[in-house]
Length: 98
Image (cartoon, rainbow, N blue to C red; front, side):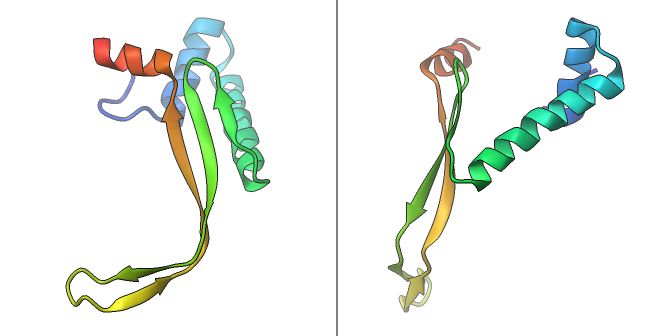
């Protein structure tokens, strides 16, 4: 049974188990393989696009000056790589419909 509020790796594996007929161990192994492949690609600087779902996009941010909102003191923000998720139109439409 799916946990309430959060979709987990175990939930994904259970869905594969029920819909595809793989064993629980095989299903979990498949989920882990997919997630590992995605993580490896992003670690190598590649974006990940899953049609009908969305894209995980990497962006390099330059160094900039930020400000502490409490004190107003300026502090340097170091350059870094960030990941964003952009939902596909299909996913957005599905979420809106509920």
